Image (cartoon, rainbow, N blue to C red; front, side):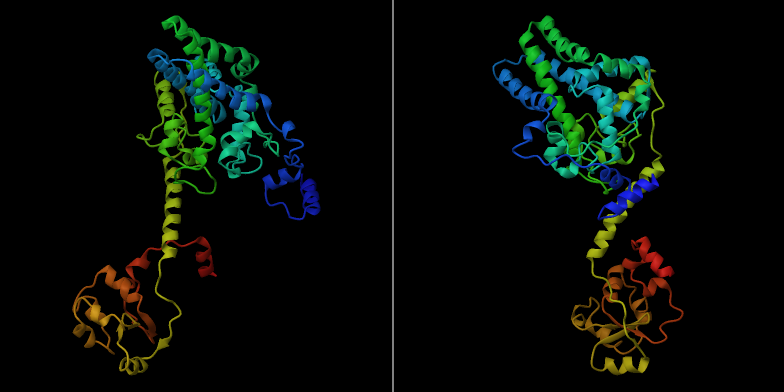
Length: 445
């Protein structure tokens, strides 16, 4: 391995920076898409047929098919139930192993997922998803959100990627007989669960055979795919990054609403083994509630939760980064002030309104008339030491007064105030500051 890395480093213009760079250097990307080769670079089956032609045909058929109330209720109900097969099954159970399911629950989820957005068997979906997590926002991520909203939402399923998705370990799925059963019979399961069952329920139940096929089958699948695609696109664009801003995933209630709780994506990418996406009790996450309910009736167990202490560290880190940014936007007292002796200070005070407080010389030009206590209180301390007066001798000033006074520093009195305490010479706004570790290292050295 070392020899291979050295060879790549020597042959490339730029050295290998990390493992992903090494992997990318091992193979050449596919040729660019041009007018001469575009038709060979398109996924005609799973892409064009399933994602474009089917939705268009569905909308045309829906335009000519009345929607009865029972069929509408059934379409929504079956959509939510089958969607749970994707979120609780494909995603949180098999992709991230965030809980253990009984064989009964595994079979149910495997069947429901086959009825959902027709996105392939468990093995294919999980392989792609684990690659998405391991190589997030890189060329090895099949749903690479850094390539834009359209690519993450639909492009990656329409056009062959320029790079093969990164390799991941799915050995646990190979050993799972239910996963392999679903893969073996996947086309028949789709035909049964995604097409036959919803159509039969509407047809036998209330005589709406055509509505069952158009709405409960076709339109439901189209809507579920769009909802699932929002996890790859919208959840990487809309919202905030309360836990980490290194990558594109974000948290937002709207995305959670569209995806059965998968919209708290920043949390999920930071803590993927947690069975929750909305980790706070009030956050909208039906999948979390479903898994919790299954655990209470004996269908699920070992629900994984990331330690609360570590979750709070993530939030604190981002809060500190936001505070650091605000801190850098403010103007602070200047450093590198000249040191002057008492005689020089007094001589300069004859020409300018200079005041000595807590060992610092302050220039009050432009402020004398704005002093809340009146200009006369300042005048009688010009050229003198007004420390005692400022700190309670005349008036015990507020934090705002301390901060404003520090902005008017123009010099440091030689010898300073040897017995003064920190709260008197450090402005309140600077007692607590956000400091980068590099700055602390520089101070040590």
